[in-house]
Length: 67
Image (cartoon, rainbow, N blue to C red):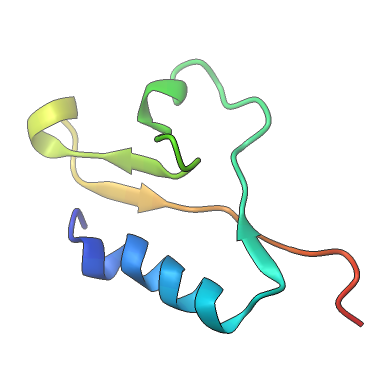
């Protein structure tokens, strides 16, 4: 989906409740994927821009010392 309420807003709501997580950029995305990683480290494609279906992904990482 390309709808913010189904993508970014879901991630933001989760992060607001689960403070022990963060969005992490892939350390070395394949060069074919790099154009689709935004400034916040999230993967996003848009039909009008990329000639692809709308996709979204965010890598959420748990902080190491939560216990």
